[in-house]
Image (cartoon, rainbow, N blue to C red; front, top):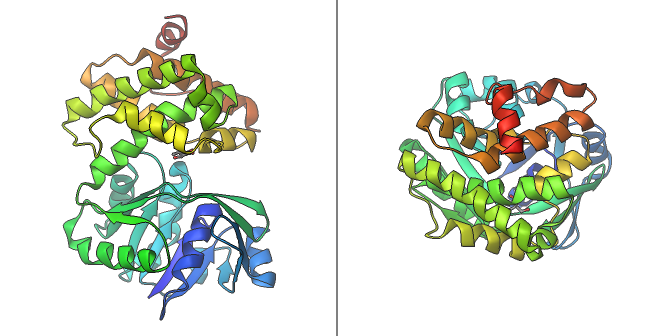
Length: 328
Ligand code: PAF
C-alpha cells in the first residue's frame, strides 16, 4: 500500500513511521521545512515512550509532488483539513481513499463535499507526541486510536488499517458508530482543552483543582444537551466521568489547545467548543459556560497570533451575546 501523510507534524509523522514498518507499504511524509529537510538528510527520529527509532522515509513539501497513492492520511489541524485534502485532489480523483486523524467535529462532511468523494475515513487518537526538533518526534502518550467511516463502503479499508496499526503495536478499535466516537472525544476536548488553555495548567493540574473540575463538568454537560438533542449515541454512558478520567489519566499532558497558544498558533476551538455553540444555537439550547470559555480562548488566540485581532471576530456569537457570556 502506498500511503501519503499530509500535514506531517508530530502525530502524522508518528503514524506514518509505524505504518511504514508494515510489509509492502511505502509511506511518504508531506510537511514543512525544516522538519522535511531534516528527515530527507537524517531520517525521522522517534523517541519517548515508544522507544528510540530512526525511520528512513521519503519526505516532501507538497502533495502535488506525489504521483500515486492508495491512501492519503490528513493529520493537520482542523481548520487546514480541506486545504490539505485538496492539495492531494489528484490522488483522490485517481482512486485514493482519505483518512482524517484529528480532533473536532464536522471535518469528514466538509472534505467529502469539497472533493466530491465518499472514500473518507475518520479516526480519533489518544496518542500524543511533540516535535522536539526538526526531524525528531517524541511520543509522550500512548492511547487508543478509534477508526471508522460514515460511509459503509469503506469498511474493508477500516478493518485493514486497524489490523496494520495493531500489528505495529498501536491500541486500535474499529467502530461502526464513528459519529459517536468523534462526539465522545469532542466532549472530552470541550471540557479539558479550554480550561487548560486559559489557565496554562497541565491536565493533571486542572484535574486536581476542584473549581476547574467543576468547570469541566459544566462544559461537558452543556455539550451533552446538544448530543442528546441530535440523537447521537455516545460511546460512554457517563461523559462527565469520562472527561474527568481522561484529565486524570493524561495528567502530564499539556493539552493541544494550550500547546497551540504557547506556540503562537491558531487553536481548534472553532471545531470543538465553537461547533457545540453553533449547533446549540440552532437547537435553542443555552451554553453560557461554553460561550464564555470560547470568547476567552479566541481573545488569547488573537493576542498571540501575528495577524492581531482578526480571528477574535466570530460569526457564532453577536457582541451582545459575548458580553452576556462573560458577565453572565
Ligand atoms: O487535545 C488533547 O490534548 C487531547 O485530545 C486530550 C485527550 C485532551 C489530552 O490532552
